[in-house]
Picture 1 (cartoon, helix red, strand yellow):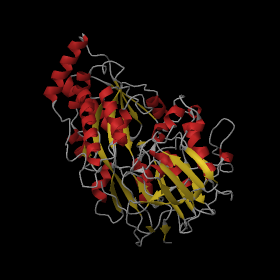
Picture 2: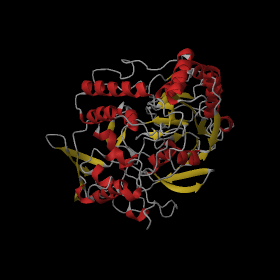
Picture 3: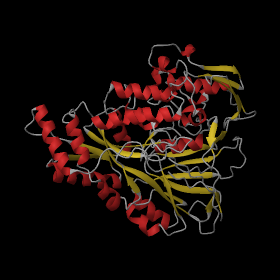
Amino acid sequence: MKKFLLFVIMTVLAITSVACGKKETQKASAGKGGGDRLVTNIGSDPYTLDSAIATDSTSGYVIGHLFSSLYTQDSDGKYQNELAEKEEVNTDGTEYTIHLKKDIKWSDGSAITANDFEFAWKRLLNPKTGSMNATEMYFIKGAEAYNTGKGEEGQVGIQVVDPQTLKVTLEHPVSSIKQKLASSLFIPLSKKSIDDNNKLKTDPKELITNGPFTLKEWKHNQAITVQKNKEYYDKKVTLKEIEFRIIPDSKTAYQLYKSKELDLLSGLPQEMIEKEKGNKEYKRVAGFSSYIYSFNVEKEPFTNAKVRKAFSLAVDRKFIVEKLYKNNAQEANAFVPEGAKTQSGRDFRKEKGGYVKFDPAEAKKLLEEGMKEQGWSTLPEVTLKFTTDTQHKKVAEAMQEMFKKNLGVDIKLENKEWKSYIDTYKQSDFQLAYMGWGGSLLDPITKLDLYAGDGPNNYAKWHNKEFDALVKEAEVEQDEDKRFDLLHKAEDIMFTDSPLIPVIFPSDSYLQKESVSGLQYYVGSKPDLRYAKIKK
């Protein structure tokens, strides 16, 4: 799974450290889904079903059930072949020749070929597509040059050897290549599913998929329903239908679950977690995700680093975790969560600790110093932006009170529904704004490179040449220990300059009917529902 704007972002992907990956089979009454149909909830309408465009976890969740890639994650968190039969690697690890499985088909019965992968990947890289995810492919030779208009499509290291064979040439060896190629960014596409304007068709009659399910119906802001893909290669998939009900309010979703309208509840209301912890249906999955508030460093008053740090030190994360999240999260004193480890067992976060803490006195001092540096007698007006999610509203209101109490600053709050909000965020139209970043690739670089250079995800507009150089060096460093050291230095620089306020590292909570089995939970990802079975 890729990085995701979460929770949404994300991002989710996103976005992700303990995974409840074991399949369970128990007895109980099912939700309204019935024996061959599973009903669950999502918090918002998917932003898109086009993986080239998707950056939020809700879109990624649905896309992951409609499309398959070369590799997939199993219930133990390991990456296995999916559409790939085998691969051959040259001696220096820069050329991968991937042979596809035979007789894999699109949902319309036509053959999936290497050409479909080449088409999809180069479409994503095409500057005209406008994909915010293109940087995720920059490890492929010539990809960055093509995407930035400095190279030609024919120079990209994606080559069709024959209909069953794809050759991928890399800029440098990539140790996590299978994890990257398992992302929904690397799915193939049928040209029949792309219209004359290079847009993905979303009419169920026109969208051709290759995953375990096909699109049956999309009632915007109500529900999206997928049905079993009869052409899917893996016959272990027996579930006939999944209905993703769009329920923005977690309390409403909880009530529907309790009234047996849902088979799987994603995202318990925080106030219900303590009550449900002893319930056999309760599942908790720690993620590799970070909830933060981004500063736009080009907008006053956050053009000043001391002002930014003052706002970060004024946040009481312990209160947010204990009172608002009922301890179903960790205090975030840095950007990278726990869970990213080397083969020798070094945990990136644990070995370094955090950078920020609740310190009202220091916060007030830094604010005064920053204002003096800028010549401000009065702090420019601040608006904090967030989504309409109930929990996000509680956190925003708590932070508003903290800034008033600890800094003497009155800020305004502004919220929008998710789709409108994500457009605002992507346009960097904010001073201070909520975002969550997630993903299932347990690598600190998936967080840190969000703030590197002129990348498409650097919505905060923060730039630091030394930080950029360290991240770039880490991208090609093959020694795990040296790589971690480089990324620690990069994060040191980040928190010297404070382009963000880390708030929490969240966990995901679910309720799963005991009649439901076969769900696979992964670190940093929504559960995989394809192998679900429901006892009537």
